Amino acid sequence: MKLIKYGLTLQRVREEDIEMLRQWRNSDYVREKMEYREYITPEMQKKWFKSIDNPNNFYYIIIYKNEKIGLINEKGYDRYGNQKSESGLFLKSKEYENTFAPVLASLILIEMNFYFLNGKESYIRILKDNLKSISYNKSIGYELCENQENIENQLYVLTRESFERKTKKIRKAALRISGNDPYFYLIWEPLDFESGIAQNSERIVKDYPIEIPSKFENGCRIYYYKTDVDNMEIISSDVDVATPEDYYQDPKK
Image 1: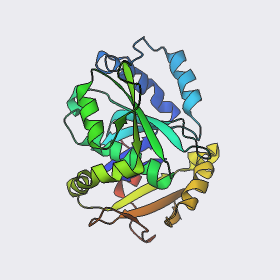
Image 2: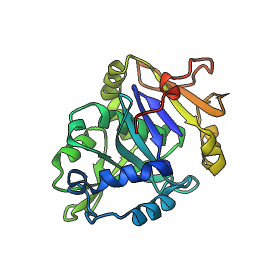
Image 3: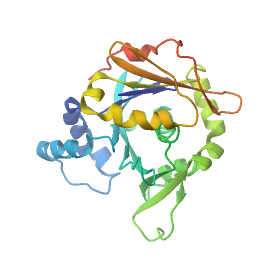
């Protein structure tokens, strides 16, 4: 599974990625930003992957300039109930903090949740002393939940309405940065059909109020929608649009 927009790719985590992720997660740079800071063993990592490799969890490798640089996730998604989920993100090293990558990855993940999966609310947890992360997430519409003032790892909530209101200018700027390509590409790969993740999620995509066309190519189902660059509304797209270049590329290990 791949999500492509704003010149950046999110690729669903595969089993062959988990040792790389474990190395990142155990680094001092990442651990100091996490509530859980104990050393993660290979056995613990395998157990974690088995727990999240299902249709209710979306964990992606962030691919920026054809390099794997971090992890972003939408977990615990309740498709047929309250349509709420919880998100998280970490970069593998400090050098990517001041790039556009974390902002673009966040926008893609949230748009996937609200527009493809028709989500209603997205939650995140932020350590109360991580002022940089708090400031950024408030800028895209997240609000502190009730009774969190004295909690160390605080809970924030984002609605679709708040996201659209707060990020109109940010998303316009992101489109300019990425060459004004208005398309969002959701690609289900053969592995996603084998696991059943694609079939489970496709039922929701087809129920979205706006028709999202798709085409079948190279064993993959490719969905498209388009952003109206004038008002940043989501509109149906042409299935004959060219397949994104990133679809054919294998990022660096």
